Length: 313
Image (cartoon, rainbow, N blue to C red; front, side):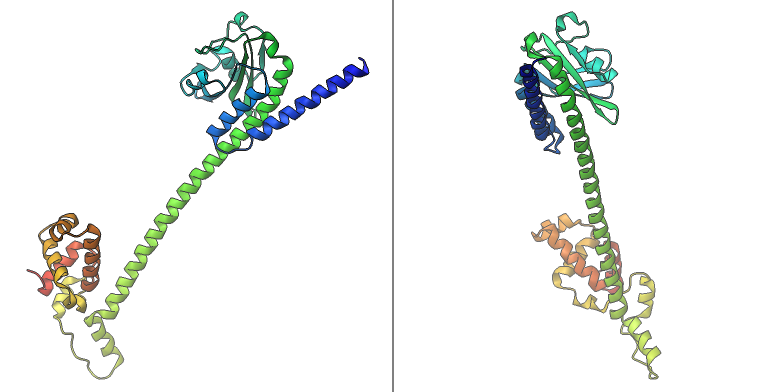
């Protein structure tokens, strides 16, 4: 080998390495799987003489086209598929995990033509592997025999390793996003539960602080002088059991009294809102106020307490 030839080969190797570096840099620059596959086929197509570059991923026992460099084939993404190990050159590569260079596809019985207007004479296929497991195939086709070579196969093998790594990162990122979404939903749910529990604690505190019967018992325990008896019938309190009667019941507004009557008639929040020409949210606000004043937390409890108190019939 002459010095001139050695220099030429070294220059070619340098150019090839630079091309590989440029390709892998572009391909590994995204965590979106769909965008990653699209950039990969586009980058390979621009760097290697070809008429078609396709990326196929294994889904079950099928090898499915997920990205294509040419417009005709791109319309078939998600639709065109081959049975792994049974159909096509790429199907064979997916099953064996071995790269394959086919100088003349017309002489290879495994070849399955993609139904597009792109003529193919030479093809190469390289497996995409993650942890020694084949997840897909890079397919590069050319219409002229001289357009693809064994050197191109070696180049795509290097690039395919980077594509597989990028796909693995995209899968992990998607899983992380899914987990983050579930975690966020959990936090929101627990926050809502905490807020509900806090509201219940506030209601319980108000029950003990504002109920006349409890005040009477506390005063009798803390002072030698007998305090005045509660202003309401203790029997009513006993009948209410878990639904203590608040002294604020007398502070119900006229609107709240009417809403109580409609609740007793069995009307829904929506029906009550339509009756008063207000929003259901406003009705809900009135209900919360009624519950607070009566010392209850349900429509049934409010109606029962209001009847026991003689507020409604």
